[in-house]
Amino acid sequence: MPKNTIIEDIMVTNVAYATIPGSRDEVLNILKEKKISGVPILKGNNVVGIVSRTDLLKNPEEEQLAMLMQRNPITVNRKADITEAAKLFLENNIRRLPVVNNGDLVGMVTIADIVASIADLDITEQVGPYLDDGVVAVWCETPLPLTARIMELSHKKAVPVLDANQDLVGIVSELDIINASIIEDSVEMSDMSAGSDDDEWTWESMRDTMSIYYSVSRIKVPNIIVKDVMIKEPITASHISEVSDCALRMKRARIDQMPIVNADQKLLGMLKDKDLLKVIVD
Image 1 (cartoon, rainbow, N blue to C red):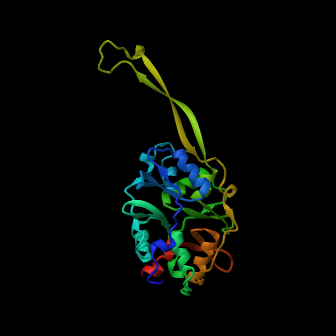
Image 2: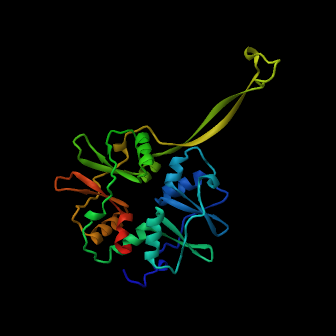
């Protein structure tokens, strides 16, 4: 990687963002419309947090950005070398870095931006050693809410989908789940007694009860099966494919994970874009 490649050379300057105070619905619309996985949260022009798809799925009933966002996010200076950003991604298990100048947001750099640079480096090393050794796959008939829960528990952003013959038939990501989800509004009731257990004049059978009705808004994952929303015929590679070639496939298809298969198209593992960063850090 050229030593003079800096963040300013590869960052995105037209950054989608939300501000405090703000709502979950605003962020959800941005993620769907822009097809991105997270947005910085600003107060003035200062970055005070980040909200990702994972945050929305983990907290389906929370509406306030101040409660949803990850506070005090790690940032990077626009003049930093991109190997510094790669180290920050790997060490902190994050996917995006707000780029700042004197504390003000001036851009955003993601793992995909660095992978795009790796695609141009003609790195012929095979990807086999960089495969994720903790692959989680789901059956194509798995209900989507269960798939979302499996991904949350296993900390996976995307999972391969297999049929009953164990053949790879698709891949599903958090983005696919978010795009299929809806905002569901409902009214719920809570009964509150007007009497106290310590009140000697209140009989249990005659306790006055006050019903409080309140509205609840939550993100609802529809009860459909995963094959209804998965990406069919996903882009794949073999374990002997070259690093820069795989990076180029990810760049062109705008994907962050790629199934690695054998000659019979049986799943061997998953190659994540983040794992390719190790090539320029090690």
